[in-house]
Image 1 (cartoon, rainbow, N blue to C red):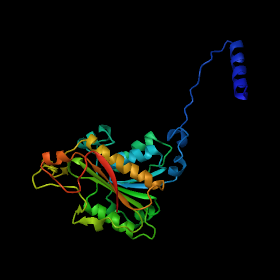
Image 2: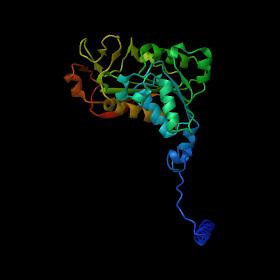
Image 3: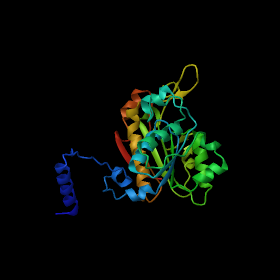
Image 4: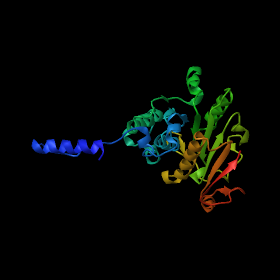
Length: 291
């Protein structure tokens, strides 16, 4: 009989002899190895030491941040200048209780509340291209920078900054095409250049084209903001694909620059007024391609 069982029996005999009430005490472990894998994940120790920056904390970026935090990435830095609005609630990590919050601060606060053992306190409430030299200096030593749904100016700024470093962090850029029918996640190492594969503001490897008036972008009345008409479920394949690629890279499972593509419903593109390119050859499939 183990010493623990002997101690338990002695305690029960003492409690019974003194007419004390005996109650079971439930103890919950809250250490990182237990939370992220119940003590059996071979990746946990490695992920605890990783630092990731996420630029863009909208519908895609906020969900990627949540998945990386749940996987056990030890430190997240979040960057976004936008304010969380009621129209964002249906496809964002945050809910209506976060109205008026800056998205980066709101996501950081929510994730820190859920997983307080992780370091998710750093957030920047301005666009990446407006960060100071001191701000950028703090980001230079991270393991990975993730951009999620940025405009072309933001993406170009991240790409140029990363290439200016002697030892650039891994770079994962993710976005969706119209209606989220196609999703992209590009992973780059070293000095590999994202913008070299763009034609103006659009990637040369896009899979769909949309004529003017097709409705793939809607302008909000009264404010001029634009948004893409798709739901949270439409985004999930791309979010999952990008998050898994980020984790694979952090764990050393992807040795070279590559891109992963989510092929959604090819027929839906044509039904919505778009045109599919020749490379759109599959439906509801993910593929990894060389860069």
